[in-house]
Image (cartoon, rainbow, N blue to C red; front, side):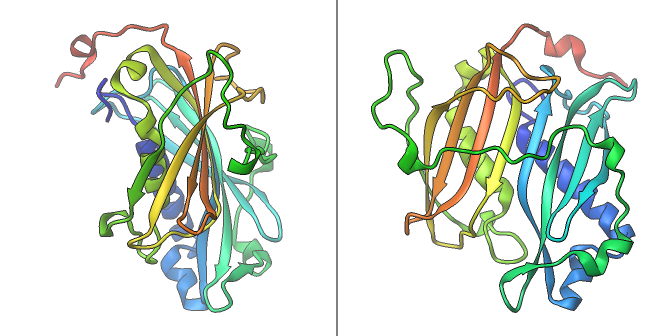
Length: 266
């Protein structure tokens, strides 16, 4: 939870991944099933759209996932978070691929297509990939009045690692979210996150996270807001290669809540 006792974006990514992993385990396609055939699931994209007030700490929410699109190399899995009364908290999707662990290349999903149920009519957002500006394409001369955000460096430690020895994908989001200080969070609510994971990072590596203002996305969604503020975080390895790009979209808060009054009671 955050300082407002609300679900964090990192928690939203965790809930989505955990629910999808449990779903795939029911289909006998979980990570521990795929490793037997030298395959590994890799998430390459994540898009999440949030309502202004996300779930309160200890509040019950339902996490629902389903696969909405399957191609030769990509599987798109949608998600939705709802309160018991059916009111939506967040929705979005992730893009999954299979990696051949011996060849270190993408492997086709075709051999598993019959095991993967797809509900195309339940697609909630366009799966068209957002194009993020790379560091070389970004002007280092900010215009007057533009957002000024510092650079952050992070040295990878054992806590950041996943079961496969790579940096856990949620770590990149945790690093990127450091740009939002308490005053900013008090005045703004996150409305969208879009992540592209590009390259692995390992123990001892140093990640440099550079923040730049970004144009607000105008893709149709419940959470689109013309007055929103967009921020792009580029996380780069020491060799200059991009590891991840994370776009966050923020809107001015319009709801002032009394957390103590809203806390669930037994």
